[in-house]
Length: 409
Image (cartoon, rainbow, N blue to C red; front, side, top):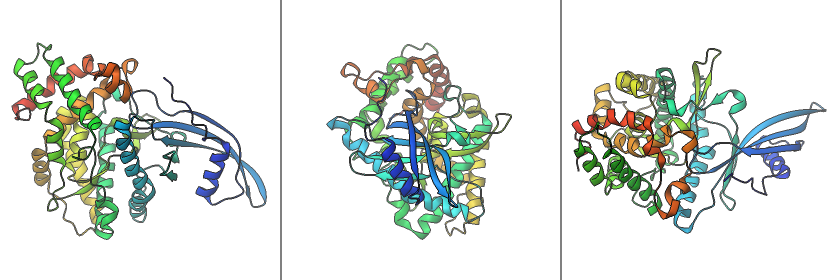
């Protein structure tokens, strides 16, 4: 079913938003067009609308006509069971885009760096209807990469270097204003999340166990191990993402996968710039949260197998360089330290590949909304697990995970 435009999202509302955001009472909106900003399978936790605006303003005594494109992210209609989840996730994003990210971006800008981590936020509203308005990055040339193909090495390097900048700026901010960063305590995996979140990960893993039992390429023992893991996977994910104060910690994006990455390209279609989007599960903790989630969801399988160490080193080089420029007192990890951090938390990559990677590789014609996945005939139903692309990737990854002991309870 297509997402309907909210009644309140009209020209009058947009005019008020623009006037407040730009501190310009001369703005007069003459027309807007509202269309869905994403297709099914690209976004799972909000309703997104693209607003094309035609407006005038007075500049130097002259009336000028301008156009602008905005994105409205609106909390989805929800059942009583999942209302707390959506409200909680939206509160995190609204806090990030209106408070924390502007400070992180400011720190990088003051270094003279051209990096900007995110779109500009124009407005947030925490009461009904809960929503936020941000700039649309599409007119500036930003777009999603082709998720079904996975990221090639060039895309991975652009993304991971920006992750290094994101983490470094969060460390600088944590040293100066600890509460601005350390207040993000829940993330995607936390004991206080409702059953709807837990069910997504447990049911997805159970479905994977059922599918892998049909794959003759794999040892039957792997399917049995995955089946047992399905009962505890959420709890184990909570364990590996739990904050340990004495460790090297950063503010994680915590949903760092291909659907939440926007790239800008040169004339040869080579990625040259990057923006983060969707900040609903940001989480202060080990950088392994972002790195392992990324490895488990986003690179093309050959890139993952051949260039993991190179990508990791590029992340660390950027992190260390920007931390030094920001004059952070925190000591960055060595490469060996970082490898040990990733080894210690490696199960998190398993979680990502079990539950998020299917959403990446699903055929667009078979993509479902989160409600369709969780509530179809009152049972979990996700055809992504039956896709040939996902099978090809997992028949390479699962024996590796098994040899590392990651499938054992």
